[in-house]
Length: 367
Image (tube, rainbow, N blue to C red; front, side, top):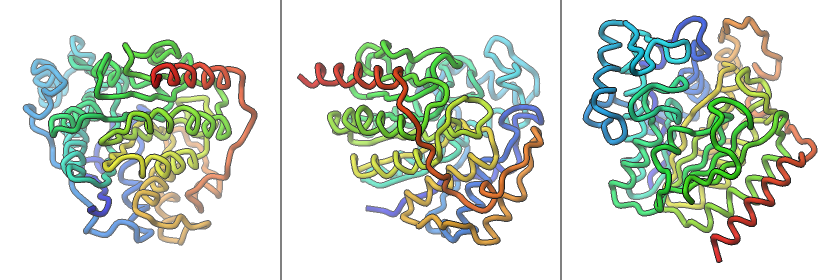
């Protein structure tokens, strides 16, 4: 089996959704620079993602929408018919090339794991993109394009696990009723896009686990071990796609959840041995320090590297050099460490009831 690869690109370093957008922050550059500063990312494991051609994107997106996205980049003008130019989905100089690079990174990841292996595409995970328009900061749906490419290779069963704070509505549109893709999503209840209710099983293809504000490590551990891992084990997938958004951690401004990044490490560790192929992407994450730290921990786990208790100077300088329009000041721990302290807590009645309901549903499905 080949060694894990990390997929990046120069375009992430220079582009931004705009000064006041939540994605004004550097994310892929931060995890890249941290990993290099720690000696975790030799050239042999780094791959540069190309920019996908339009023909590679019509596996999910309509040709008219792809043309509109290219046109918006060329003219820098909004196109309301495709939700281009809104506050959430602004038109910016790389509005086609950046998401097309993320999508190509997913396709490259699929090719890398064709015969087995692990690939990390932190620029991917854009799970809100819809066939004919932008949606929720996502112009293209990289997870859907990647999973469809895996299926096109002849793989029969794919497990899609999503621990982003927001529900994967675009992925659910793509694989509603699928007998080949099982979607498992843990997301904040009563938060945009307001989909993914507990009783929504997407015609048998999804397990949705909406969780309350304050969702903690203890509750995550219960869901991981009692719902996610048994569901994946029963499916026996040929490949697992893990959307590893970092916006469920305590410090993130776009959720009210209270996880540590240890939950990301725990999920990667548990899933890695459950299928011969594993693709891990980024996703949400809007605090520059917490997202960089979480995703660096993910890569360390995939690459078999030991996360230090305290960062060496070169790595700490990467975090110390970050700036944020919110003018928030990071704690010393956010600069000097990668791994959060555990954030345990009580198990809420909502989480306990959801786990009970889903365990009963899985038991019925498994006969």
